[in-house]
Length: 67
Image (cartoon, rainbow, N blue to C red; front, side, top):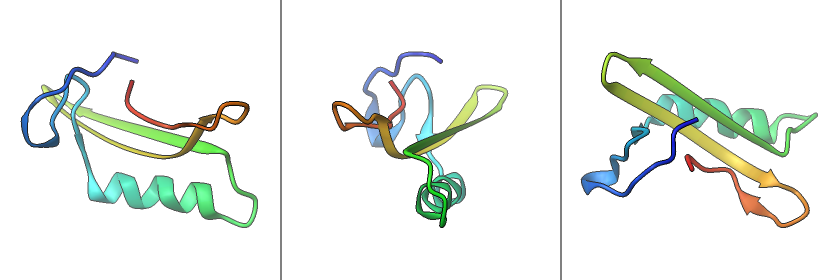
């Protein structure tokens, strides 16, 4: 996974948060048998979109993110 660098209007080196992907990862984290975290990345040429929810590390409660 690429490291994200801040850019304007919510866009990063990885891409922009996509509402449809966000809805899917939110559902994965909230399902009856939840996962601690989820990350989806969709690439179409240079257009990168993502969704992230939950935690990346349970021991530190580090939020799931694009970094």
